Length: 385
Image 1: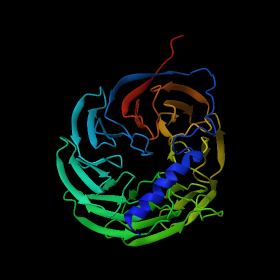
Image 2: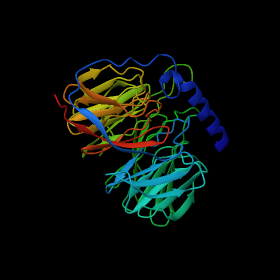
Image 3: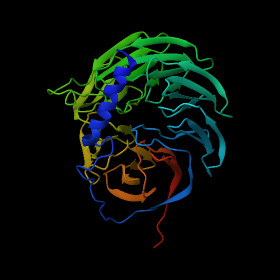
């Protein structure tokens, strides 16, 4: 399919997606914030503006923490590195083209995608350009770096591997994609010699890291309904891994635990998410309506469910000590207990900002990037009674 056609239907869904909380939406209204006794007080350590942010595009451009540094990109093509402890700017590079993905950082190199579309590598220490490589279509999910490889997934369902040091293309795999897809896109995962990819048709695929050979694939959810929008079953939330299992969820479909060895589904339940899931003491997921869920990762048994933040456009949850943290589209961070989902604290990061990308944690610090380009780091402080 020509690039232009794919892009048009892609943006059309962005306009239609307001009803699912994926863009600027007025109906249904976000749940009002309720009062409860805070167990601690979130406090800011520092904040800074990193550029023009993401404008009105639903780009999940989030921060990356590596070696006590924070790396961020924005739509205008600025890539910035700052120190985690105090926000001191180490370097800033102008790519001259709008970026489409968050950076990946590893093995001394920062890699991200541009709208052009290109894959661009910078030296993590200085921001100096190392190489550029052409891409066949846009990449909206962050690349992943592992064992000297960079893996990316394009919006039309291609997976490409590049040599991290040189940018040479090593292999490509073409899965394809439906005509209509969600703007959110899940990043690849790597464990051992396997590359795990969630596609927009609801398929989970394992490829060989060295040559791109298909190892196994399994359909997590099948399209339902009559209209194209009803049939969306994208794996838009980043899958999570442990030593034996990959946990994956689709939009308007299923939440599943899949064997890494065989690709067979171990358990499955109906679910819908585009934002994400995480593993801590249990498996935690935010759904497409703003619910927060906890499941036993071994059985899929429901442990608790919190509906306090309905329709607030939640990010994926992140683990912070014994707690969970989510961001919302009105600029708040919310803390919950992993054990039972009790609300513990919240803070308004900025009164005219949205949080669409999951925060990053380097305990006891949490780093958040707003849609408008505000970068800040917070910690938990005991209440003084």
